[in-house]
Length: 298
Image 1 (spheres, rainbow, N blue to C red):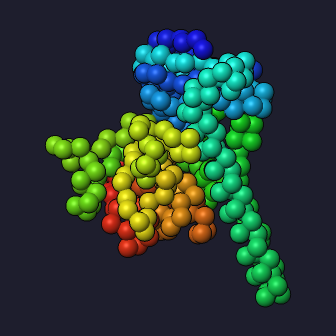
Image 2: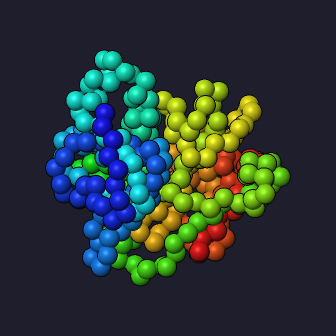
């Protein structure tokens, strides 16, 4: 596989472009955006180890977003032919790509699970009521249906159009701070908290086989050790952004995630919860979980 170095401002691929390469960032930063009415809308800010553009190898559809280098970046470039060769001769090279594919599959499966649950509840309510309620629907933007990069924009409780037409909040940064002594032990010594410089920022449980950030079945930016009975799932939740909006998404965890007192997850009514300016709280796991953090948006 070849490697390419991009300079700040370089466009790696444009929204709507037809190309099939996937990219893995070896160093530097890349921003993923879609076109907005007034300005580009940021969907992700990626760093070392992140993969983007991989779905173009699978579905051969136009790119659903633009990838632009924001800090000098070196990327590994994988073509469909490279992928085939790796399968046959160098399967170890596929581990980070497989983790990304599994993350996408997990997200789609969670969306389907929630859709089926809401529809079943709606049918049950219709049998009990003479006036059938509206069937809840999950809005899936066209660009997400087309694929073309690894991000799943799963804002189930708001329509994308309404979200992007709201006035700019001016929020640009997020930081994670521990709220319990146990969580404080997970932060590097000498630091009060952790500045988040990439989105999505994925949180999960450290696995026995996890020597780095990625395993075949999970890809996390922040791993937390836990003991049985586990509160934290291997792929638990993520902090994400769409334009100036920041939110937490549960990634199909066993016990769910609690954001500002609202539980989210496959067992609840939504997988996401918005974050607001200032202080927010997040509990990773059930109400009894000792893993509690504060998220500050500025």
